[in-house]
Every structure is written in C-alpha cells, then in structure tokens.
Length: 116
Picture 1 (tube, one colour):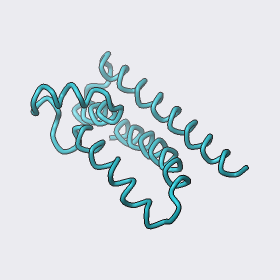
Picture 2 (cartoon, one colour):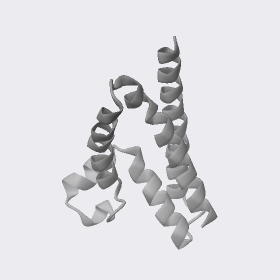
Picture 3 (spheres, helix red, strand yellow):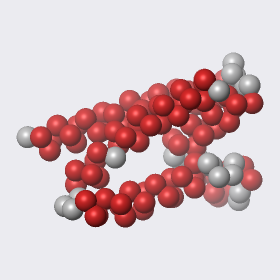
Picture 4 (cartoon, rainbow, N blue to C red):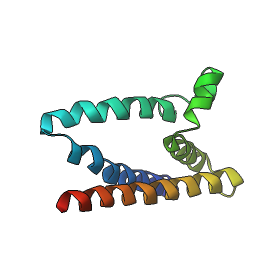
C-alpha cells in the first residue's frame, strides 16, 4: 500500500504542477474547468484507471502507451498485488519520476513567465 501511495503522490505533484500551464493561459476562471476536463477525461480513460487497457481493443491499448498516466496506474496495480522487484515496476517507477520532474519543470517555467 505504501508503494501505491508513493506513486499517487508523484502523480499528484505532476498534475498539480502541470495544471499551472492552462490555469495561467485562460482569461477567466470559468474557462479553466472545461479546459482541464477536455484534457483530463481522455487522459484518465487512456490511463486504464477504470479497466486495464489490455482488456480493450488493440488500437486503444497501443494508443494508451503514449500517455505516462498508464504506467503510473499499472505501477500502482503491480504494487497492490505484490510485484515489487520486477523490471516492469522499475520501468514504471522511472516513467513516474520522469513525468513528475518534467511536469514540475513545465509548471515552474509557466509560473516564472507569467510572473515577469
């Protein structure tokens, strides 16, 4: 469970940082909700959060491999079933950390640009 919480924490940091970019670009607060939902809903569905992507059609499974959220969801699933010391878990952990670092960098960059 603890490993799963670490992945959820990484996801929280990444998405919170990444949400700065559209938040700083919209002109009114009312625009933020639709913009975020237009991005978040497809990303959530492609992540395999509701059902594993392997249960869907092949084209959907392939498409979902281009979103880092899928690797985070798969890592949490692996952690909950006890698959800790596998190459899949290492790869997924690296993707999670890279996504969090990249998202934080993007969020910080946008925040700095707006501040000037």
